[in-house]
Image 1 (cartoon, helix red, strand yellow):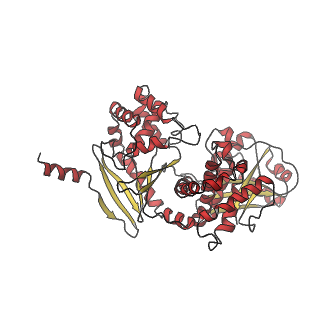
Image 2: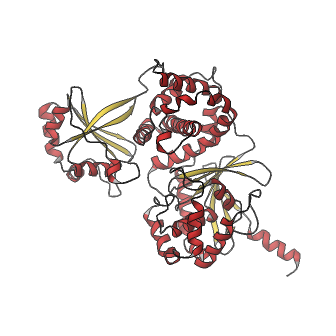
Image 3: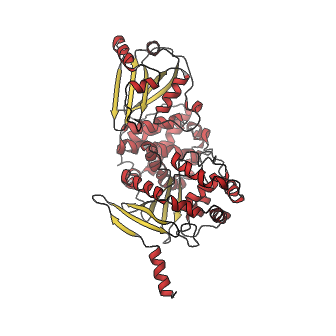
Length: 498
């Protein structure tokens, strides 16, 4: 073949075809992956790209295969993709390449919340797909991970797997673009008072990863590319929004904390005020980074997606051990956002958060601003242990882990004051509503429960806000509620935004 003709063929192979979606500022395009086909991609706004990446997907699949599909970064994929992966790659669990991928993926990931080492992820992302010799991003330090991945890909014929399931991956991108076509970067820029000029954002959808991870790459022109790898295959909108804001917030927060290292060091004695140290973030800086990313996510969810989904987010984080997160969130809502003249950017507000931590650590009184933004209510959910487990299965914000770890500690209801029986859930695919069948699943007769609440004058309400449904039964005290529902009680709390 003549050189000119070969060049034309090469250009045609990587040609991006663009079509503008009607009535929406979202651009659809495809990228051609040799031997696999046309992968669907989208561009949202000026600088957000959404796509899948079969290099990173192969890393997650290879490490999972080497672990016997027990890798901590893999345990959460939805059943459709999990079954596809285990069926296809199961025969290769015992191969040396798969086992070495698993071992290498755990290097420098002593933090239980960290799924993969960022350096390995960056090395794999740097190459064109599928592990071509050419590079998409500026050269990362080469490592054995890429050689191992190529060997695993050859042994398992991974290219055939991606070719067979290309349609599923394309639908994943299309569904994401249909539901999350808003510009979350502009929202974060407005919050931080800082435009990420010269950089771009890449959202990589990976059904083979549990949760999300953020890394920073360098484009061919030398500009930064902020990569957010996340599992969007879940139908749980709350989970996806949380990943989107949380991981991208780190791209804004981390440079601020690096510039303010000397200031942060002065407040390290207050590290115990944050919950991060107890759940895998040993340094004050890392715990502060994670806590603020969570507080910022709550604030942005409340502003752009409704207070109820923000309440669920805050509830979830508190249950996972992020102590005092609600007070830091209040500081931001009450003192930063209403007073942007004093604090035009978030970096100038950081000293206020650090001073709060110091005062909290010293047991000094703290002004968090006006109350009433949200309320954390004491809740007594009443029933047997089996009934409690059923309630947890209906909750849309159940944390990952065993059923035992999801249940709050059992206590006997005591003292006076209002008590609530709260169930919050999302209707399943069968369209289940709050009706007899739902309460029957919990071991209650719904009609009898309603009649009993009316006879005893007990507060009962049903809230339907968007996709979330909350059922609340209340009594003047815990004993009255316990008598109504006849069982044992365990203490919990519920977050309500005003």
